[in-house]
Length: 401
Image 1 (cartoon, rainbow, N blue to C red):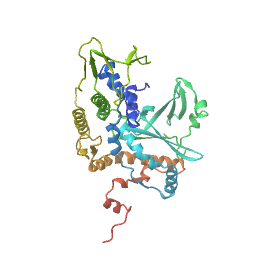
Image 2 (cartoon, one colour):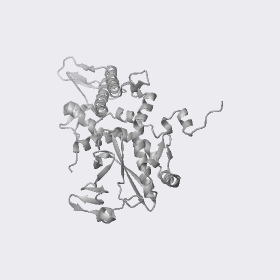
Image 3 (cartoon, rainbow, N blue to C red):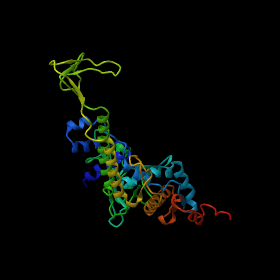
Image 4 (cartoon, rainbow, N blue to C red):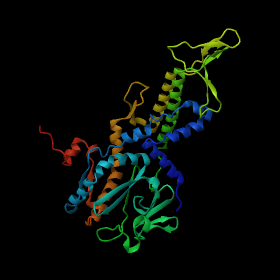
C-alpha cells in the first residue's frame, strides 16, 4: 500500500498552522506571488492572523465540562479511575480542536504495569485500512516514524495477529519493540483473549471513508493569504514611516565605505542624527535639491481592504456562524463564532465523539479484564446540555421554588 503523500502534506500544513509553525509556508506563498527582489524588501513574515486556529478553537467545547460516564457497576469504578489517573477527558479539549482542524485523530490505547496509556497520533503519521461497511472499524494500521535518518513503521493487524516494526522489507521488531509479537504472541486482546485493534479513530465528519483530509481547505488558504497580506501591510507601514530619500547635485560629507556580508557591492553610508547638522557638498557647484518619495499607498486603506477580505472569506467559510465582536474593522479579532453556532457545532460532533468515547471505554474495560460491550457504556456531555437536560439526567438538582 503506497502512502498518500498529497493527503499527508496537506495534514502537516494544517498541523503547522495549529501550532504556529507555518512561517515557511507563508514565505512560500509570498514567493509564488512576487519576485525575490521585492520579497526581500517586505521584511519579516507576519503570523498574527490565524483564523484557521481561532475558528477551530472556538468550535471545540464538547469537553469544557468533564463528561459523565455510565457503565456496568462492576467495571465503571476501575475504568473511571484509570482515565482519571491519566487526565483523559482534560486532554480531550485539545484533541477535539485537533480533530476539527485535521478532520481525524487517532488514539492508541495500551496497558503496561503502570496502567492504561493513551497516546494521541496525528493522521499524517498513519496509514489505515478500515472495513468497507464501517470506516471506524480499523482492520490494519501502520504508524510511521522518522528518527531523522530513516523511516520505519509499526504495524497492527488483529485479524492476522500482526504486531511488528518494519524498515522497508526488514523486520526490526526486536530493535524497536523489544521482541517478536506475531501470532499467539500478539499482545492486544480482549477479556476473553480475542485479538483486538488498540487504535480508536475520532473524526469530525462521517463520510464513509477512512480519511477526509481536504474538507475545510478554504480556511487553510485564507490563513496563508492573510499571512501574505499582513506581511505586505507591515512593509507599507515601514515605507510610510521611513520614506525613500534622494539628493540631487550633492553628496554627504564623512560617509564611510561599508562591505556587509549580505551586500553584493560596497556602499557609502553615513549615520544621521536629528541633534546634529548633516553636512552636504555640492557635486557641480549648482543648486542642490533634497527630497523624498511619498508612499504609493495609504496604510489605513490597505488594512481596511485586508479586513474586508478577511471578513468576506470567513463569512464564506462559516456563514451565519460568524459575528462581529468588535465594531472596529481594523481589529484583528473582530470576528468570532456566535454562541448559538458553537453549541450547534458541538451537537454535530456529539454522535461521532460519543461513539468513539464509548469504544475507548469498552477497550479500556477489556484491558482491565471486564468483558463488556459497546452497548454497556454511555456518556453525557454537560458542556452542551441545557439546565433542563441536566436536571432530567440527574446531573444537577431542580431549583427550589
